[in-house]
Amino acid sequence: MTNKDLANTIFPDITKTLEDYEKEYPERNLKEGAKVVRFAPSPTGFMHIGNMMSAVINYVLAKKSGGVFFVRNEDTDSARTVEGAVDFIHETLKHYGIYPDEYEYKGETVGNYGPYIQSERKEIYQAFVKHLIEIGRAYPCFMSKEEVDEIRENQAAMKKRIGIYGRYARYRNLSVEEAIERVKRGDEYVIRFKSEGDFDKKFVFEELNKGKMEFPENDLDFPIMKSEDNLPTYHFAHLVDDHLMRTTHVVRGEEWISSVPVHYELFKTFGFKMPKYIHNTLILKKDGDTIRKISKRKDPEALMFFYVEKGYPALAVIDAVLTIANSNYEEWRTAHPETPFYEFEFNPKKMSASGALFDLDKLDNISKNIISKMKAKDLYEELLAWARKYDADFAALLEKNGDYVTSILNVEREQKKPRKDFAHYSEIKDKIWYMFDELWNTSEKGYVFQTISDENEVRSIGEKYLNDYYNESDDKDTWFAKIKDLAENFGYAREVKEFKEDPSKFKGHVGDVSTALRILFTKESMTPDLYEIMKLLGKDRLTKRLEEL
Ligand code: GLU
Image (tube, rainbow, N blue to C red; front, side):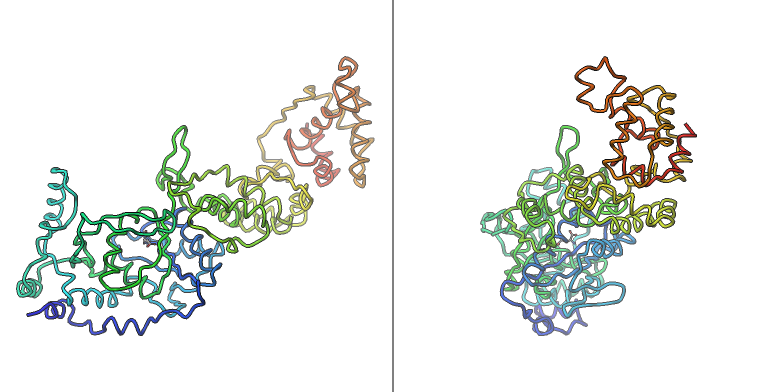
C-alpha cells in the first residue's frame, strides 16, 4: 500500500488535481507592477481599527498600481463566528468608499477567482491536502486533543519548545497500512503537515516593512485540516487561496509574523512563488502615562462602530489611519489636500516597525479641518444622514428647517479660513442648539452672565439695542458701529484700547457689551460670529428671548 492509497481512503471523492486548479485559476493578466491584494477578515468579531488599516493599505496598493483588490471571507472557524460580522465588514467598506474589485456577498459573486468564502472552498483545499498526502508530506494524526494538551504542558514544564515536532509527532511515521485501517475504522484525526525543516537552521526573509529578517526553519508538524469539519487551518488556507487567487502582496496583522516559517515551508513544498508580505504595525494608545496596544474590550474607538456613531466623515478616518500607517502621508496630504487618498504612493518602509500611536485628538483635528472645508449644503446632507440614524428628533428639526440650518452651518464657512469647530456630526447639535426654539424652550440651561453680571443692566442694554439700533439689513460694519454706540450710551468704552488706557472712566468696554448680548440671546459665551447669529435668529426671536429673561 502506498501514500496514494491512504490519500484515496481519506478523500475518495476528490478527483480534481492541482493541475486542474492551475488551469481554472490562471495567472492574472495584469500590467507590470500591478498588485493583487486582498482583505481577508475572519467574521469572528466586528471590524476593528486594525482591520481598517489593512483594508485601506490594500486598497491604496491596488488602486495606485492598477491592480486588483478582493475581499475574502475567512469563515473557517464556525464556532467563533459572530452574527452580523460579515454584513458589518461590507457596510464599513462601502461607507469608506473602499470598493472591492472582487468579492462574494449576499449570493452575488464578482470576479473569476472565487469562491471568495472559505467555507465554500472545501473541495479545493482537500485536493491540495490530498496531494500532500500522496507525496508523503502530510499524514493523519490520531492524537486526541487531551494528548496534545498534555504534550504541550509537559514541554512548558520542562522549558522545551512548544509544539508537535520531532519525537512529539507520534503519528508521523505510522505505516500506511495502519493509518488506512484507523481511518476506515472511523478513528478521529487531523491532517498534519510533515515538516522537513530543521529548527537549528536559519533562513533570511525579506519582509517589506521590517526589511530582511532571519527566522529559524519550521519543524512543526502543524495541522492543515481540522477533524471536526474537514476545513483547513489558517496556514493552509493562506497557501491555497493566495496561490490560486494570485495574490502578490499580503497585508496582514502583526500577529502573523511568527508564522512566516510555516508559510515559507508550505510554499516551498508546493513549489509556489510566495507573495510579498507587509505586516501591519501595531496600533497603540496612550493610557494615562503608559502606552499600550489598543484593545477591543477596553477602547470603544478600537471598533469601527465608534466612528460611524460619532459621525466622523469617512475621509477623516481614512486620513487618520493612513497618517499613522505611513510616516509621509501627512506631508503628502498637506501638499495634496484635494487628491483622493488612493493616489498616495504607500511605502511599506515608512511604516513604523514597532507600533503606531492612534490618538483621537489627532483624528479630531483632521476631522475639524475636513468638516470646515465642506460646503454648508454638503454638511447639511451629511448631518441629516447621520441624525436620521442616531438622533431622530434632531433629524426632524433639520428636515423641517433645511434652509435655515444650512445658513447656520454656513456661518464662517465657505471662506478662506473657515471656522474649525466641529470634529464630528454628533457634537453639532450641542454647538448650535440655541438656534432652535424647540431646543431653547426645552433646555434646562441657565444664563451665566460674565462680563456684565447685573441682569437688569443686560436687560436694558438688550431693550435699547432692539428698540433703537437693530436693523435686519445692516451690514457687519454698520452693525458693529451700532454696538459701539450702544456701549458708549451705557458708559462702556467704544474700543478696548480706550478702556485699557483709563479703566476708571468706564464701566467696561464694547467687548463686555457684545458678550452680554451673546449670552442673553444664546446662553452661550462662545458662538460663531454674533452678527451672523443675530441676523439668523431674527428680531422676533431676539425679542422673545429678551422678554423671557
Ligand atoms: N483571517 C485572518 C485574520 O483575520 C487573515 C490574515 C490575513 O490577512 O492573511 O487575521
